[in-house]
Length: 437
Ligand code: AMP
Image 1 (cartoon, protein in one colour):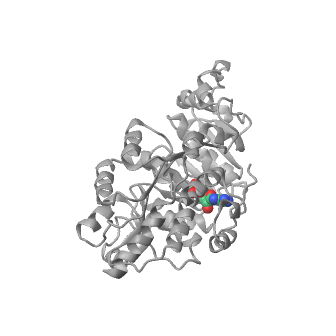
Image 2 (cartoon, protein in one colour; image 1 turned 45 degrees about the horizontal axis):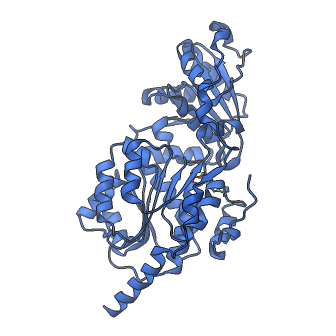
Image 3 (spheres, helix red, strand yellow; image 1 turned 180 degrees about the vertical axis):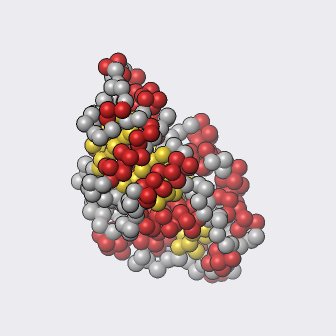
């Protein structure tokens, strides 16, 4: 993919050591493109989804800056703020900062709703170098004066499209109003609807734009197959497939929360270690389920799309689409969970008669036919699909992309880089003025 190294991107030894410990040998395309520009202090618009390595792309240069311009933290101070839409993503991003920055001696914190606010207030009272937060809880803490965002030097808005989808736009704007004008800002989004474009215009100043390959191409690295099956046989088919032992860590997607519960229940009944995760579960139930999946005690995690978004679990061997999604891009996002950061995986999809139109749309988007397994134990109970179900080429032209994982950088903007990192010079000035105060 790429021959660049993390050292060549300009990262210091203390970060390189942590990356080696994390098992990262080569930077991903978004890291190659984003890190040098961020080290220079540029603002950035990253069009990328999870699985591309975007977290490290923003965390590493941020950590480098914070470690180089160390300050005595004021009460409630936050130096770098990362806003994310969900609790799971918040926990993961916080964990990434702590892991990459373990040799830097900085303070990292995470706040989100659904858990007690007291301990969060106590953590923030001492000031933190990096705060990862969901919008609602952060605003509560701002309202209680437990945190002061007026000295934020680096601001990251992650998964902006999802943030807006979840109705956080007003909260996000209120938070931005708390930030100083002079800061480095980064915005990441998998898609760029008009609302996100508008947000970039208010947040970013002369940003470098980095775009990683559209999701349609992710599909190339994953072995995919379709099981035509009656709806009523899906549970039995899944249990049978899981029985063969090769599906060591399997993520099963359902369209609804109830569906996720039903499938997990059925599997447990069939003797398979399965847990479900979705929005109706309490925070602690979700964490327990995720932990069981991560540590292998539950080899199967059943999830809805919303619950799974942003969820970071390494080594997923198989993705099963128990229900086919009605939005074809969702299929690509789902199966991408088994081929993260360049690894390969296997995706199996169940398709009942009513889902054949969804399948056709998916095949159009990815511009290929997904091979059907026709000798599975429940194949006899559904009529064979018609030849006319084959995908028509053409509509997918817009999804044509560069090689898998390739990143595009807006060359013109990049050429105008120059300039010192804003945060860096500001950091020094601030430290000085504080001493003299
Ligand atoms: P993200 O897109 O930030 O959610 O990252 C996706 C996954 O890739 C996470 O599990 C990271 O730990 C992993 N990852 C990120 N960068 C690298 C890298 N350079 N080499 C190997 N794995 C990576």
